[in-house]
Image (tube, rainbow, N blue to C red):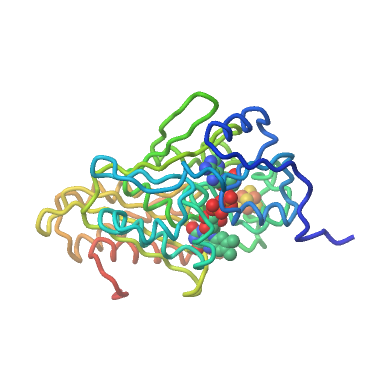
Length: 336
Ligand SMILES: Cc1cc2nc3c(=O)[nH]c(=O)nc-3n(C[C@H](O)[C@H](O)[C@H](O)COP(=O)(O)OP(=O)(O)OC[C@H]3O[C@@H](n4cnc5c(N)ncnc54)[C@H](O)[C@@H]3O)c2cc1C
Ligand code: SF4
């Protein structure tokens, strides 16, 4: 019998009106509960009947999780703030234009109207073997179907693969790492604040999760410090089609320049690893250098050291090099 699609399995639905009610429900139901934000990733899993949670906790009525406010020159973004609001917010555009750009280029207007800041960073891997329900490592099995001689792996990882070669698909995640954001996570009566770089995890830590979020956890806000506000920002996404599509590779860079000299930077690529991949060796190499072609060319070579392409994704190596060059030169159009 063919699999049933589009008819969701039965679950118990909760629609709390406050953070404390949501936390109480999550606490009571533990690993049986699924947090739902905008539903843009959630409904795929439920309609395809690949994930079958017993309880769904819809955050749609928790208004205290929405909104963007000033935080000492930085910003605090509520987890349920839509991507459209992030993209259009005047403070985000003024202080952190790369985040506004990253949010604006996610998917389609309809998905941005519904998808949230918290959901975008918490979304799961897009590897089609996994999403089709194949029993791979990430699904608790003992094989990676994307890393076999006949696998279709054009979109997969070139860095830091460990059994699973799926990549983090988010557009806002690299921008948030480049802006040194942190994530506020509540669980029961406790709260922890996790730096963006630690929020995203690779298969070496847990092959079944892309983030540190565990049952009972509620991501409530994303904090952006003032450190990189008003500095030079660069964001670029390369995708197959110039309409809604996930990134093949994207890049986010914050550059603190004094004249044409780079004083400091944070540079992150996504779509190449299970976590947004921070180019710390590049950051070190370009410190104190001019923002010119020679620096860009040198950085591009460093950026791809250690890359291990699969059968169909070696094209990501020149792509990363080109994006690093363009970020350093601050170019809007392809030139090399
Ligand atoms: C057709 C299509 C195209 C897309 N293209 C892109 C793209 O180009 N770029 C891109 O970045 N994304 C893209 N996406 C992904 C989309 O942006 C995400 O699915 C969406 O941002 C998820 O947000 P959501 O609010 O809908 O979260 P949901 O789908 O409801 O949740 C996503 C995951 O996060 C968890 N979660 C959500 N909020 C919280 C919270 N506050 N606390 C704890 N856990 C939470 C949920 O449990 C779930 O596992 C696309 C999606 C679709 C369907
Ligand atoms: S890349 Fe990861 S998610 Fe995809 S089949 Fe391999 S183990 Fe599964």
